[in-house]
Image (cartoon, rainbow, N blue to C red; front, side):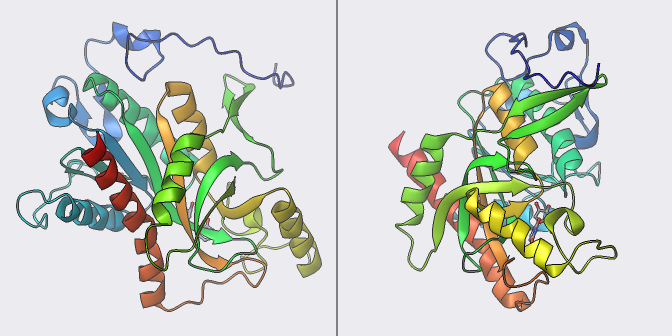
Length: 309
Ligand code: R2B
Ligand code: URA
């Protein structure tokens, strides 16, 4: 009955100590992670991934490769990391790189794309018997009322109605999921960011939408049915509700990680202030430097964690 918009009861079954909550998985003789081109029969997942402690995910394959090389060098691993190879080379859906205990994976754009990736990633962590994993989405976003280049660390992801929830349709029912992220982790990341020079950063709500144009109140798409005044009024209301940036993956990311017991954070740089415009007009080199900021923060955070544990 699709009208029963009742909050979901947590009736998931825990498969032992891992992150998955699906009793059907135990019945499979082989699990094929189709979009990664990996599988439990074809690959020794525990030896390939058993030491993973940090997973960083982001939209673009090239950016996640750059991040893997960067963290490889920052962690002082053997060589310069430039020969790092795509573990998912057998498919062009996602790219995956490993630098010591850090896995770097691309997730494409939007909720369906990251959701598919997360199902397979969480199963991968389960099959590989990984423990105490922290997962961080590093990405780009549009800011609201903040200086472009500011890094927003999300406390909670909200939907286009500013509600702290994600609606997942399952067998013609709407299931409402919690989008709370790990507050301690967000605070530690903010603290860490304050130790980096010239690094504007804040904690705030992140609005997650299903579209980049009309869905984010842009006037510059192929379609637009609202006025500039209506757009501004909507974004002002978002700001008052605590929203500081807008992107397209945080809600399902927060919801899935929360349900699976993964410690998670979302760290996105803002490329523009949506109260000032819709088009991304900064030069390529400025945008490149902006996109490096979440990487810098996460690298500094991971280094700290590895040295204090
Ligand atoms: C941020 O940037 C992408 C759209 O340009 C989208 O994946 C997101 O969340
Ligand atoms: N990504 C988004 O989803 N929105 C923006 O405005 C910029 C990047």
